[in-house]
Image: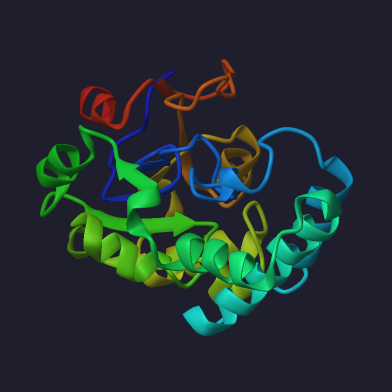
Length: 227
């Protein structure tokens, strides 16, 4: 499948598009894995995610810290035999919120953004938390973008239509003149419903797959399929 010209704006997801977690898990860094198993705790994890999802409208990193401190407390309560202390939970939360080194930038991300900057309007459209802003600056990614739509500012996640409406409003282009790169087909179907052209990136292990939209294995391949 091909993208349709003209394209004047490009929206990027962040996770598994431009950056990825070193541990392979966004919620459990290598530091957190000292305390929590990577597998199991399904009931506690689900309750924790439900808590995060219902408290997602945030403004500050302090609010994010309080939110994740409760999340990790819920996991700790499911492991009483490990005797995870309040001080441990604070250290885990500090690491999650403030440690930019828990993620890394894909090796072709900056060179791709360099090639696109000035030729297209570039935006971020991502499910994330307030700490992403200093992290993007630490990674050297922030200044490449003209606009940002972060889920925590709206209190909803993709594929909620508000996410795409906000992104299009900020970019100021007709939706058909924009594309969105994401690793989840459901998010891209939401973009399609808003009129945005989708591109599935399959950099993530066990990535989604579909024949209904253009696909790339890594972000630099975008340069090869742009019309």
